[in-house]
Image (cartoon, rainbow, N blue to C red; front, side, top):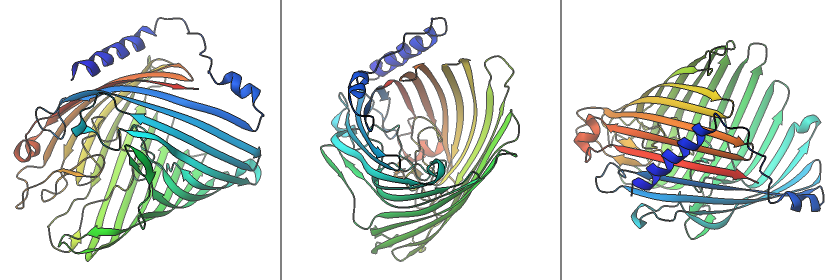
Length: 440
């Protein structure tokens, strides 16, 4: 089960490191190159093939549940641009998970041939500064910690949405209304009536100071929720936040984001918040150009069950891979996390990254949530005796063989802390993977 992904990880690492001393490979010619040359200029076809072999020693920290499997994904794109101000885009996707045990299969791993994107975009003004896009599409907003396409997932995420973007040299505003597509392993993706997301996201850039401030507000609705007391009703969640980024010099970079949530879930009120801060320093003139970074994350948890107030932060629809460990066992809910990391560039085409993470519960009366926002380990009614979830070490390497071909390999190992040992089977998990992506 575990041997195959580990073997591919080693092979992928060997391929990447072997590239350090090799001469540049000849450019890979897209199989669609001749097709596009024969087509009119306003019509263009492209695609992507990704194969990733991965595995886990345990699922949800349960012994004897390890598995190794292959994840394949094919995307076919069609772009139609009859005029500079008008564009149609279609993307079909087929995602498969051969070799995985049925008990581990879910909609994030497998989706038979489906229409993932299909939208029309209108543009106006100089440099297309006013754009309106409507249809099935990706939404990647800000840092993507709250709204993103989650492209690491085999099926990824898309929305039925209408999005208006208005930009100038120093500012941009995005306004959107969307419903997330629920993928199904053997049928077309669908939306759930009434489960909607609305938002306004602004950006103000100061090129001289190399800083950006990005205020936003999101409104999430769901007519099918149940309160802590078991009362069925509607969810109205408002997230008000701001993100700030800055590059103080050619060496130091930083980012801070804070989000506050209010609203109601049936007859319960919502009072939650989250934030993070990142600081990094790059030795640009040193060999390998190493960058060292430190990050602290917080997301509130529920303080008392059945009190009519929900304190667990809702991470909405994030691209959550990597911010809280590549093993993807921890989400931005009821969380305190510290990460120290370094990344360097042995060669312009090769990047390596090493991270070490510490995880704790924010509230001992709330549980541990996965990267998908689902509670996977509950705390005792009286509260957890210890809040230490565990620690995780991550190693990742990517190799851009050509612009259209990239290889990568990584391994994340989460070591169970006292909370997991006391409230679950107490086993950690090791997650190795290796992938190849070819865009044509």
